[in-house]
Length: 84
Image (cartoon, rainbow, N blue to C red; front, side):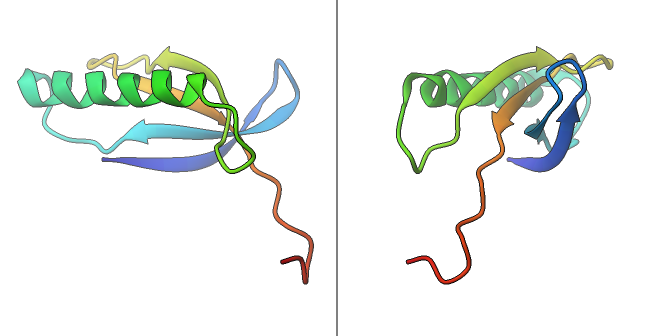
């Protein structure tokens, strides 16, 4: 459904994970349906608070022809070497 990139938020000076939809056919019902699904996923994640669930920082429209949403997520810290 999507791809996640490690990115940097210069305003807040922190690393974020940025989830975007895979490039697909421009416009159409399928693109709208996938955008709505990503937004529902972001809303569901935003309601959760658990050590094994990343926090949602923001949802923005990608400034291109589709205006598809992008979700900015917390970058989880890697566990210490040898941690169980």
